[in-house]
Length: 547
Image 1 (cartoon, rainbow, N blue to C red):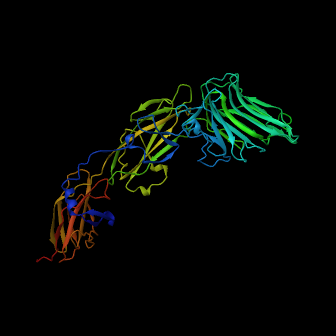
Image 2: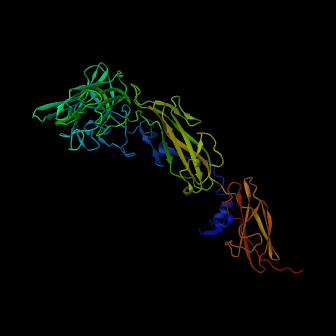
Image 3: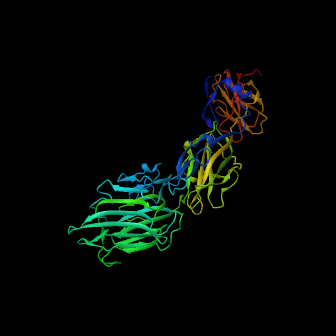
């Protein structure tokens, strides 16, 4: 089956099929195409969703993975460069306690035999958290691997920060969450034992730094203590940040981003005076748990003074997912509506939430829930996706299940979904399935009974009109060879000539004695740039008539 070339409206060249295919189309074999559906998600998967910003696939919520906001990490080292990169990252997402590791490679991690793991539903961030039972072997021991890291022996530390998420089963006195021990040699040759302890005292996390700070001349600072003002709520996630500012000697303790305790490692015990800085001894080790019952997640250390991170489970600014341009098969395809199915998913922000799925949404009107979590959808369509830009004005907001305006049409369509978390950041909407309902463009059939009558320097053409009310007009093609419609001699202009809805025309200006070939095509009122197939071809030879 061969291809032939013809000129479209405005002289543009387009490709058309041979007369065999044109005849099939004229007979209606390719007409009558009804609505079609393109499914994203569900059994079809999400491979067509190529651009994802703070959006990820989550399994187990539905029979197939769904799209939802990514809980991510407290600080995403893969994102914009941090001013102070982490010195240690233990996320507890490896799947088994014996696989827990420091992702920076700066520290070696050893898990006790009774240490457990909480799954995604209970983790604060990512896919897992450490689960401590309060037994002696329920602990995680951390040793430095390199000489230039925060807790390496012999180091003189300037600013530092330690942060983690905590979910205590109870907050009674005596439960030790974190401890660090080391031995430091003084200038006088004495061995001094150093400690950092973080343990619960009367429903508050109490911190003690013993022989951790030293002043000029190796002067030992008295034990430094601080604790939270507010009691901690059991069975609730809270974020904890200890940080030291070497410029002022200030040690701060923040819970959920709020300053709860403050002390000074200075010669005066307050602002002013000589600042005492940490000096790290040998044989140091950091121990998590051991005498603690609950979960701990996202432990990080820094050789610097950091700001509190975002504290919500899901990013407050939301996230966005965009499909690649999806090919609907024919130019000027009408996109009728977008349907969606999903719901909302709660993380383990409070006791008993357990990652529940709420209020499955079935695809009509606003995709919005009572906790203000929501999904908003946008589409854009056209015959040439390479002309699209990043301009937001190109995207049209749409209501799932609602009919789309006629302007949303083309061979290609792109769909975007914007995810907004709940007001407290603990719930994300999820998307189980998107359905794109569309109707392929059917070009109008050509007119029938085309005839050509030769005149002196002209040819009279006529045809029976196409009764389709969507027909916007007709194009008359002419040329000097069969199937080659590149004529340009007619007074009305070069082939093809747009004659509107007329059903007859005289082409003046043709050369007598030359055989011309003609065909007529119809175009619809919304898609004049893409006319339908040719009519049957007719021919005529203009001749000078006897008077």
